[in-house]
Structure formats: structure tokens, C-alpha cells
Length: 393
Ligand code: FDA
Picture 1 (cartoon, rainbow, N blue to C red):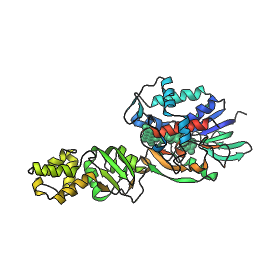
Picture 2: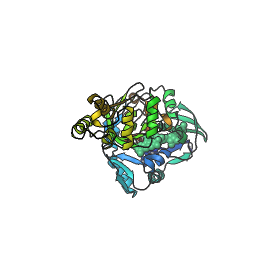
Picture 3: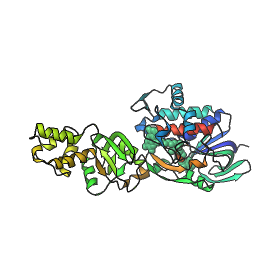
Picture 4: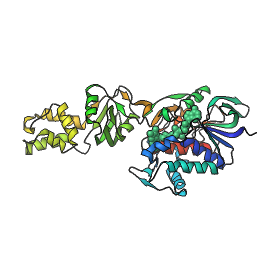
């Protein structure tokens, strides 16, 4: 029957393509579909157009999930080295930028081209611009009503990703399918996303917009030490994106704007040795001038060190080393790199990604409640979970 497949995969992003390749290699008849006409858009725009396709230091601790153990099995069976082997096979040049983050030397489009070559070689039928209207269970599998007509399959894979960046195809489809089959969902929310502020703090961020520093950012027990960027809406940069995945509304964030310097010790020593120095200039030795001046102004510190009491210097130093800020929210799915939450991992097999209470239904990639840190971990989860399901569909 031409309209019947062994496997139908909905969502031709990173996870869906990897799953299709693996299932096709096993001789399964696979239909890989996407509602977008341009597929793998997230790969194309990722990593500033160079795709941070994996991270050499991938480990379970690099992921957030209600069940931190769930990702272990898939990550062990398809590792960053496995993806590197694939990249090398296709002659794609790459480099480590920092912290184990691997990027294409040239373009993210090379990754998409590579996946499409592998999809074709595995005999997968790929169609784009396809809408899935309904999904029903039938004897031995699933029947789908689609914009191309009725199709059936034994295994149905949901690889439709999260809610981030709706304008390039993100949809809540995967969560709706999970709900249809009675699977629990961990409430989704934007992650790896800039934080926004209001009032005086917003005004300061706007004044400093475009300025970046190395910072240590803390929320509860979680700490990230990477770049921080002031924006016209608040704060962004890698350290802020990372902490946003852990931040809950109403929680403060503590920022160290000079993580390598005990600012109070420096100020006190300078006051002793060079009391005539202007406070603005002393602080500007530690951090960018614009930021130093803004902090002095906000702390109402001016003039020479000699004129500033130790308590004023302490307040100023704290504004640098332990700056407490209270975000009012995030920029949301419009700019979030990923979506936290998703299909509850308790509903899925960590071996196969199959839903335990719904035979033949699989969930892979970002739609699952496994969210990586910034730095190539999310693509690695997409490859690993797609590979795992590909062995069982
Ligand atoms: P993905 O979102 O890739 O694919 C889902 C597919 O399903 C899409 O093609 C979509 O059109 C389709 N779909 C959705 N609804 C559908 C429906 N109803 N019917 C049919 N098809 C449907 N990660 C990383 O590791 N390194 C990086 O450098 C970056 N950079 C980055 C930049 C930006 C701007 C963003 C937004 C994200 C990143 N990420 C990243 C995150 C990474 O892109 C993401 O985690 C993976 O693409 C997730 O892969 P999936 O295959 O699960 O979903």
C-alpha cells in the first residue's frame, strides 16, 4: 500500500532527520514530513549561522529535566564523537570555539545538506508543507489525515520541537499529541532567553546597551561564568541565557561584574596608597569605563577616594561583586533558544523514546522534557534521542 509506512516522523528538524536516517538504514519505510516549506530552519540560524552542532563535554549534568537520569542512555549510545565521525565523513570543516563548543568553519547549511544527503541515502521519503489534521489509532498503528490525504504507519514519531521562534515553524503540535494520548506534560516555558527589567534598572540597561563584560551570574545554587550583555530591554549574553533556564519569576539574580577582582580590597588599598585618585578612574581600571561611571553614579559616589567613607566604598564594591537584580520576565518565545519542559520523561522509555502507555508512539528532541545548557548540548540531545528512537521504530 503506497500510503502506508512503517514509520511516519512529524517534524523534519534535527531530531526528526536523525531518526529518519537511522530508521531508513534499518530498512524501514519512512515518511518524514514537516509543515514548513523550508526545513531545518533552526539549524540554519543556529550558532550565528555556523551551527554549534555539539559539545565535547556533553554529560547528563548539562541538561535540565524533572528526571536528570533520563538523558543518560541516549547520550551514551550516540555521543558527540559519533556526530563528529558523521561530519568528517562529509568533509565538513569545524573548530572548537571555547568550552568544548564545536562550530562549522563555514556554514550551518553544510549540516543541513549533510543530513539531507543521509536522508536520501537511507531511502526516506521527505515531504514539506504537509499539515497533519488528525491522528487516530487503528489496528497495528496509526492513521493520519493530512493535507496530502490519509496515511498510516506502525510507528509514529513526534519530532516537532518546542515553542521557541514561532515565526520559523515552532508549534505546540507535539504537546497536543501527547495530551491526546493522555501523556503528562511538564509546563513549557522559554529558556536560554534574555531577561527583561523595568524602572530605573531598565533605564540603566538602555544607557549601557551594547556593552558586554565577563560576569559570574548566580540564581539559587546555579552559577555560570560567561559573557553578559546589556540590551535595550535588559540583560542578555551567554551567562544570562544560561541562568534564565533556572530562573523562576520572583527570584533575584546575583551578578558579579568583576569576577576576578575583590573590588573592596582594591578600593581600600588604593585609598591608602593614592587617596587623591578619582573613584570613577579607579573603577574604570577594573571594568569598562561606561559601566564604571554608571555604577558610581547609581551609588552616588564621586570625587576622590579620600572623600569616600569605607561604608560608601563597601556599597560600591557590592554593586560590582554582588549586584542583586530582580528580572520582571524574559523576552519569551520570540527570542528564546529553547523551550524548557515538554513531554514528561516518566511517560517515555529512555532506551527507545517510546511512550510506555501508547505502543508505537515516540517523542524525540526538544518536545521532550530534556533541555540542554547553551553550547551545542541541545543539538546533541536531538541527535542522540533521534538516533535512539531510530533503532526501535
Ligand atoms: P526543531 O525545532 O529543530 O524541529 C522541529 C520541526 O518540526 C521544525 O522543522 C518545524 O517546522 C516542525 N514542526 C513544528 N510543528 C509542526 C507541525 N504541526 N507539523 C509538522 N511539522 C511541524 N542548539 C544547539 O545545540 N546549538 C546551537 O548553536 C543552537 N543555536 C540556536 C539558535 C537559535 C536562534 C535557536 C532558536 C535555537 C538554537 N539551538 C541551538 C537550539 C536547537 O535549535 C534546538 O534545540 C533543536 O533544533 C531542537 O531540535 P528538534 O528537532 O527537536 O526541533
